[in-house]
Image (cartoon, rainbow over all chains, first blue to last red; front, top):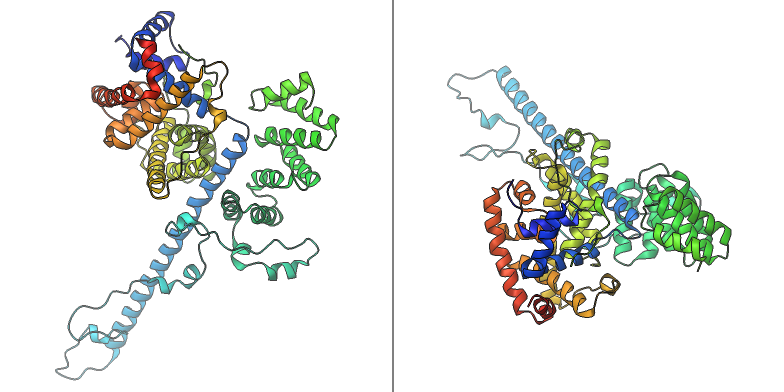
Length: 308
Length: 212
């Protein structure tokens, strides 16, 4: 077996894969080689930077949701384009066939040379080949008239789509439907979710909360509900802690990977609201169900030394 | 001196790899199975996030955006996956390229706008390390990232996979689909350039003096 390079030893030591002899060799290299020492410093720093941190569960859920939403949209667009091209081809063949059939049934005078292209249903140039029928952007009104809300699919534009504020709960459904822009109503859950995330990242937290709320109302059983509730709870926890608590409880009730995040949120909010028993219960559940969660260490400290 | 890193699951996986456990999932996803695609993405998303944090910085405000971009790239690139490496390695490579591109775009924007680097003091405030050591650690990472922006693409990829993501040379060779000797040669050149920069950098004096 060939000897490992010193920096390879370093990489493997990070995964605790070294034998005792290899560890000794690595220690020796670390004392003597600047290259190995430099890389050791780098890897240590990079491991700190890329460590798992609180909020990663929700972050990963958002990343997954958004990524799954985007290609679906692209696939749908491709499918629509394919169908349009197929329809254009069918029309072309049908018109050709009808022209040919019509011409074949016409009585022809002697010496009348039959010009195939002049009989086609569109106007031809006198000399040259027929123009090919290419579906232009104008031929797709349903796609062009509706603006694409995702900046990644609109030529890199960073514009945030304009959204009207969320209607108040007392509004009737019909009035609410009338007040909402069409593009929001027709947007699927993944698109709404992506739009809300974009708004939140751009600092438009109130508008983002409105879109999250809309998503929860319109698609209560969609996959995006959990992360949307968490995001909404985080937005609400400063001004409306009771509502935020309700959102956290809803997420915690569904289980799954977001439960740890929700339990942590409940403990934080319950502490702030002066409900220590609820906070302690949430921390106990968190520690019991997610002992390796990024929150577990802080939860243990709080359970041992008391709530802040 | 070595520092212990407890998060084993977040590190590159190596060792005797008989069969890629994610391969059936990837095949199902490629065949159009939405559930398989979702499961696959959920599985590799932590690796993608880790790569992004290492390439652009853990506290960079665009981590989420870039990670999303990488995840989309990964889904698109799955069709080109031919099984030369494991799915996790494939995801790491796709994420690395995508994150590097994002970093280059950000650098270009920064040159125009003059926005300083995002620095999170929490990242460096670790226990009992002396301030000089912390400065040296941070400077070494910065040097490597800057070097990645200026080296030829093949060297950059090898350097980033080895020195930034922590893959061994044989793993780098497998990920890049290149012979081991080629990777060794690329890394030799890249590490020489890194050392030259390190020796010239006053922030790394602490490290150089420790060696002396």
